[in-house]
Length: 50
Image (cartoon, rainbow, N blue to C red; front, side, top):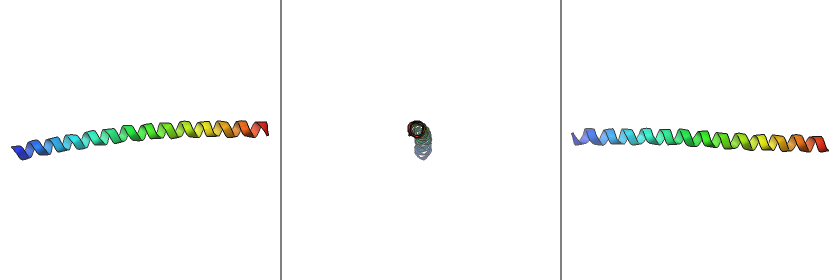
């Protein structure tokens, strides 16, 4: 019985970690996308002024 409880808790922890990793990845992608957008905007602005 103890083994079952332990395994279940370990499985839940693994699931939580996977969810956290997914959320973290989404935030990183969002951040990098906005960074790319600002860089693109900067370059297009720079290109127009020159």
